[in-house]
Length: 433
Ligand code: DOR
Ligand code: ZN
Image 1: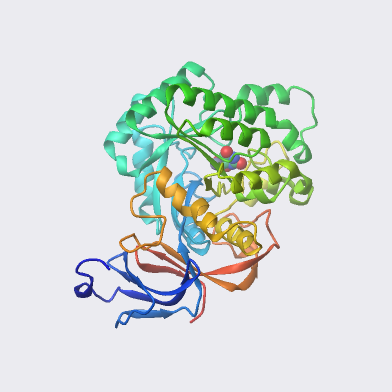
Image 2: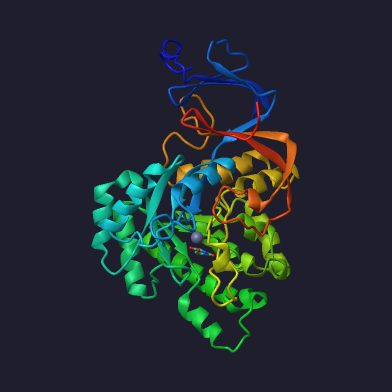
């Protein structure tokens, strides 16, 4: 119990009555935005949600999203993204810097801050690196609280500046270490991609995995691991997709601050299905092989994988319907990622403890979010309440995101988000009471 809690009740206190927390039936009292008390039976006059055994979990902390607002608001803005996140059980997002304009200088960072004022969910921003590294110092000085870390792209994907020069790359890692910033990397390497593009392979969605060849991601991952092993910065490898990469990460991880993210699509889909999706399944890195999927699952079991990120990358349907070469890569994930993982837990493919680690606890620890990512007295009340008995079908036409398509279209999911709570307030209600 929090000191002074008994005198702290107000209209906003909420009692979550009879919810299942880590397998036990509990009452949880939310007060002052926090988890005030957890006990078998709490008596209070606070507003009460009778949950009849529904499951309560920490809201997802999604470390990898492209919210797009500003000049690409037609793809997504902070309102549509927030609503999508809430419907998907996501309470915190980190937004990537490859927006228009990009988040590479103080002006771009301030624009992001202004436009994100309308967000309903918690957020931080990644900073991109352009030639002038002073920009990074300036942004961090201006508002360190809103900086999630530095994001580097070693190749082109949407609108990001590409980092090719290794000396410059080392300089960034040194700076990140000095400023105690984590460096998140999209490791596919541009020169390697260019050499595959020059091989005369027919540019088609069926060949996307061949063209954006695994070699390019593996080489970039190895480069980042080697640099990190020397410089001793903090490294987070985004959307790791191949067997070879998880093997490398496993080998380098123990002596270093190296973290590994995977996406639900690389875990659950493969290139075998790509003709069903067409360009709606075009994503970077591409959907890989069945063997890669199997090995990502292995890396989940043995602890090599730290987090699941949605890589929510909305584009308009018209853009996605262009021919293969023109269609942008990426698709929305905020509404499906947490539920897809929860569904896998129900199927017995991961434990609830591992689900919580992957979707919230580890991201909170890696990105240094204080008082978030687990359900304990005193923590901030960012929660999702799931009805494990309900099943539903993914229908993108119902998405709150502006991007109403999904490679998971038609999939039946066990476990439905009934409520999403942020800072002790119910921000989303999926049930009719
Ligand atoms: O498929 C992708 N889309 N991969 C990325 O790395 C970027 C993203 C985007 O920004 O659309
Ligand atoms: Zn991304």
